[in-house]
Image (cartoon, rainbow, N blue to C red; front, side, top):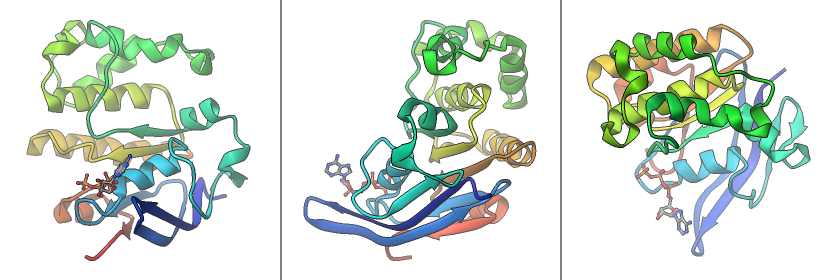
Length: 213
Ligand SMILES: Nc1ncnc2c1ncn2[C@@H]1O[C@H](COP(=O)(O)OP(=O)(O)OP(=O)(O)O)[C@@H](O)[C@H]1O
C-alpha cells in the first residue's frame, strides 16, 4: 500500500493561484524530490501534507486513510515535517533530542541516547556533540540535530524542507546516504525540497515540480 497519496491539490495565496492539480503516490522506499522556483509554494505544499495548513482543495491520504480522519498529533508523528530553519527546544543537544519524548504522542518511545550518538557520528559530528549548547550551534549543525531528532522518533514519512541547505558538501553527502539507507530499512519514505539538480540526480527516485521549470 502507498504510504502517502495526494490528489487534485490546489492552493491560492493572497488571491494568486500557486499550484493546482498536484498529485503523487509515495511508496515505501521512495525519495521524492520537490522542486520549483523560489516562491512556487514548496514549503506550503509540505505544510499541507503535514496537516499544518488546511487543505484548500483535493485529498491527502496516509496509509489509505484521509488526512482529516486521523488524530492530528498521531498523524504528524508519522508524517513528520522539518522546517527549513530548525527549532530546537532545550539547553543542550541532548535536551533538544530528548524533549519530544516527553510529549504524550510519543509516550510509547524512550529516548535512545546511544542511537542519537551513533546517528550524529554518522553525520560527522564530534563525540561531545550531545553536550553542546543548542544556542551555539551553526545553522547546519542545527539542521543535523533536527534531522537526528526526527529519525529517533521513527516516523513513516519525512517531509524535509531543504534539509541540506546549510550543509557543506561532505555533510550533505552523509545526510543523503543516511536517508537512502533509512527509506530501505522499513515502510518509510521521504519528500524533500531541493534546489540542487545534482542532489536530484543522486537521491531522487521521483521528482515533483511546482511552477515553471
Ligand atoms: N502565511 C502566508 N501568507 C501569505 N503568503 C504566504 C504565506 N506563506 C507563504 N506565502 C507566500 O506563498 C508563496 C510560496 O511560499 P513558499 O514558502 O511555499 O515558497 P517556496 O517554494 O518554498 O520558496 P523557497 O524556495 O524560496 O523556499 C510565497 O510567495 C510566499 O510569500
